[in-house]
Image 1 (cartoon, rainbow, N blue to C red):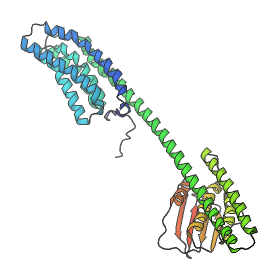
Image 2 (image 1 turned 90 degrees about the vertical axis):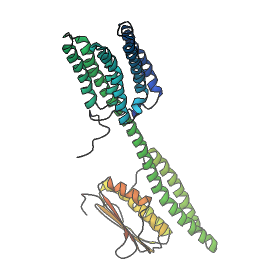
Image 3 (image 1 turned 135 degrees about the horizontal axis):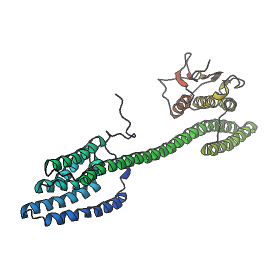
Amino acid sequence: MSERDPGRFSVRQWPDWSFWEDRRRRVAPFVVNGLVLLVLLPRVTMISHGGNGTARTILALAAIGLYAAAYLFALWFGPAAPRRQRAVIVAALFAFGGTPALLLGSPDYLTDLTFAIAIGLMLLPLRWSVPLGFATAAGQLAWMRAGTGHVSWSQVAALGGVTAVVGTVFALTFTSGHLKAARAQIRRMAVDAERERVARELHDILGHNLSTMAVKLGLARRILESGADPAPALAEVRDLETLCHQSLSDVRATVSGYREVSLAAELSGARLALRAAGVQAELPPSADAVQAELRGVFGYVVREAVTNVLRHSDAGQCRVRVGPGWVEVTDDGTVTGEPAAGHGLTGLAERLAAVSGHLEHGRGPRGGYRVFARAGAVPA
């Protein structure tokens, strides 16, 4: 049997008041309900002047005082109490609230249990608290009929009405509270997703561009140190300047959410980066063989795979092959051990999952490293 969704309201669910954790929110309801307890004053006066004997009168009044104190305690601490303590609190309220009726032999006093019923509806699952409220009303009705035979329907209706109305109000309160909590969680998830997007995009952009810039800087340094014609070094510096401007533009576009990756542009950039690193590049002449909707995600694959060749490989050759629904990047570098997936490859797997695709990476069948990506339900 599948577990019940905790965010979905159910009569079997223990009321979750976590959305009411701020104690400042409890002050107003606590004060209002404290004032509502003033309706017990007529009962105190009635018992005090009822001629029921000193001992029973004192015990009944003490029970009413404990009943009021337990009610306020339940209002303040009950929502945060564990399940067993909630049950104890409700049982104590019914015990204190029912004591005057039992001591003085008057079913009319059971009407005061409306406060206990309200707390039961607040702290217990509705499948328990609602029957408990109606059972209390039924018990008062049966006692009245068995006693004098006269039934005070207004008092019985008070117990039943409180059970029905308060139960409905709390059900709506829980549902509303969970909806607010769900909306807050959705907002948090949206923020987290945006952060992950920006981090992934920045890794893809800066990782590739910085690797290319490092290769070009090394090449320019070697040319200048050799004392040869500085023209090639100046060409590399111009490329570096262009890359810097491009990286800045890409970062701005990424943050604003408008950056798009083109497979054709990535193939062109890979050709320049591999050539600067002295790696022989075998690349497709265009990206036309790839389905249009996959060129963006495959552009990321080429970018990340070529970046890894520039960073980690001693390869002398890099080959990129493409098809309608797949792309493969291989090199002839030395692979020691079982390569682990870094952040870039993990990000690629997430991008491919969005198009029902999958990513393979590891030692190639002819040595070197191989990255292969295929989109789902796309012909090879």
